[in-house]
Length: 299
Image (cartoon, helix red, strand yellow):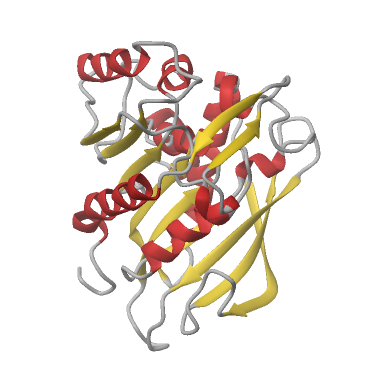
């Protein structure tokens, strides 16, 4: 990964959205604009949406989940997942790291072949975001998890590497308490070096994997599981959905069952909405996070 540190400057817009489109009336939302410093290019603005559950002004800080979108932007899938997590009493920060691409989404082939250096740099940006959240009085810095969809899930998992966290957070700074990914792409994770032996966080990881992902060569998910076990880092939770495609929750964004999403370089990927899988995956994700995040003031 690049040796330079990606610094993160954040500006809180003077926008407080009470009862935004995916928020309950009693929840509080704020729009953040993140200015990400690039290695060579000028900084680029990345949107984020912070949602806080309802509570008294002097209440305890919230556990939080950073939700990382895939190459198809922050859409109804991320918003619906945020709503589920906020109902558990957890704050969420929805973020779209692909928005810092100079050519827009899918410019670098994010969902198929993101360069390994780009993936590791994106993971380091997530540790910058964690450092920011840790400074907010509303957030319990000891209880922040990161969850991503697609390529965002790969970044969420890679953010557990010591070589990502140490340059930004130092040896004693905050760390993610959990990492989770929905349909991240096993072949891409192998290519990124996720399973290679190296110093890694002890925080647990969860992967939710479709069996009908047309991007995946045969056997790559089995290979990923084997290599993680050899590296001494088997996933704390791995759940296969044999009949599901990439983006099984796509119905939340498009309202239709079958969607053909564009691929970099041309072509399309067929996604099949499966409400049953979407509900089951969300429930399993909440079950995975509960022992680690708890409720506000529970620790």
